Image (tube, rainbow, N blue to C red; front, side):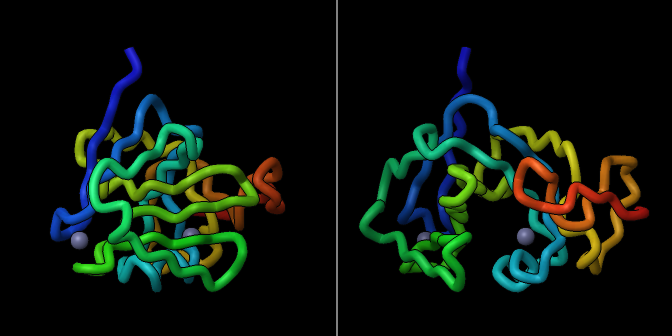
Length: 142
Ligand SMILES: [Zn+2]
Ligand SMILES: [Zn+2]
């Protein structure tokens, strides 16, 4: 019953596939996500690397990393963003918007202290990230 979701970059040269359920999902408000995505918030879904595959155009994928924590992958043709590999967590953030059939069920907001777009949805608002992800585990007001 494991579901497969197929996604592609903006131009379609790169196609990806994820299978099953994400380990976690939510919204990240950090400055890096906002800058990279050119959006006020990033809808993230975190998957184990073994369930994320490139099904087309793998040689057309560029990677940029400003820090060792985030390897950002994009299509070399259109510049469309695909995912961010977080090796220290052993998880890949496949942007929810990149896999349209995946139903984004957010569990929390992270890095809410950096938010420029308040989202009053009643979900936990982490100051940075949960303790088990290496953060303070503190929450902040909506
Ligand atoms: Zn593309
Ligand atoms: Zn972020």
